[in-house]
Image 1 (cartoon, rainbow, N blue to C red):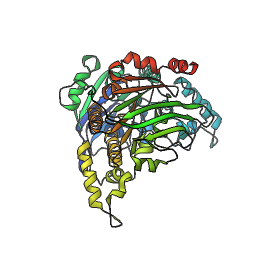
Image 2: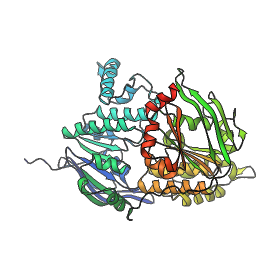
Image 3: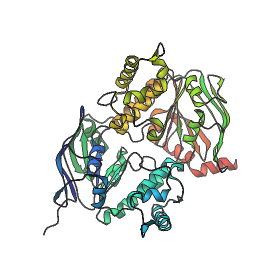
Length: 509
């Protein structure tokens, strides 16, 4: 009997939510030993499609076929038994469990009904070694930085004997060296006949790893092609329905007076290891200051210190010459600071609340009328911000969990902007965001700066930093190694200044 051409197929699959048709008659098929890049703007239906293939959701209509036979997936366990796995865009770890316990969750290794923790630790250690990452398998997952949590998610998927593996933004928190390791793992999986779905908004990355590309737009499959036959312009045009354009460089403009100043900010980890070492620079009204550095450079810790999240930090923060030392985070928000965090799931949104409630959470006092919260005032503010940021959602009173990752990120930005900040801090603001939404966020950043706001944008993406910032602060090993105006910030100069050796030279000096 002839082997089926495809391992798994979605045939004419649709998924209807209240007020939204997320997928509209989509057909999608995967061949063994290939990587298929699934591409589309936020809200195009990518995550919905892979969630259906992974048994997390069921289609409203259409069918799924595995090895030529129609099947029904009622749960993730159904998919797991059939060798279908998924690495989620939003991390799916239990923070109170160890790394090893997370990797084998619901598939524990047992001996006579008792969990064999020693074997689990050993196998977890072997998986992490395969990923070339020295993570302690006995460490609590919640204590790991975001990038290491993503490595654990990948190890969790690799622990299964998968035939189909779907990767939804697997590299969004990984460094360049970690991405290279993941690509080697993907090559190994391909050689074993595994079919891989790869979702990423890093278009060059897609073309490097994929054998074929499939493009969704507004819930429909609009294009499919071999990866070797297309380029990034083709992808952008198919995603958006518009011709691709070049990234807009930051406009040269006169900036205003100093609005924020950092003086020798320093922070140590619990064990005494330095995370920040004497960081000093300023931000002027109307200026976008970029913070560039590799994973572990201290970008996130710096923004958290500015927001008062580490009261143990040394050094000073001044907002319009006013010292903020000793002021807690709510006080700093009231003073005029706001921050979009790197991990929106953990720190930016509350999954059980509506879009509107998430958006107005930090500015509720503005909607109180004679001691009562005015839902009408809250609706007007949220609706105006939704329109301004082009947030795609079925309605402000729907759960924020119904939104795509990119639209959730816009809600977090809206929450910050509704506090009327003088300085906005953005930590990886376009992580997990499609190319169209990325342009919109960059345009919003420019518009905010043009209105006189000061903006600090931390990113590990060279193109993003160079496209948005008028001045770039480069960090390595917790210290500032260079401050470059945009005209001098070549890719080579930024990479050299961000290298670990630059941090070591800074230490020696």
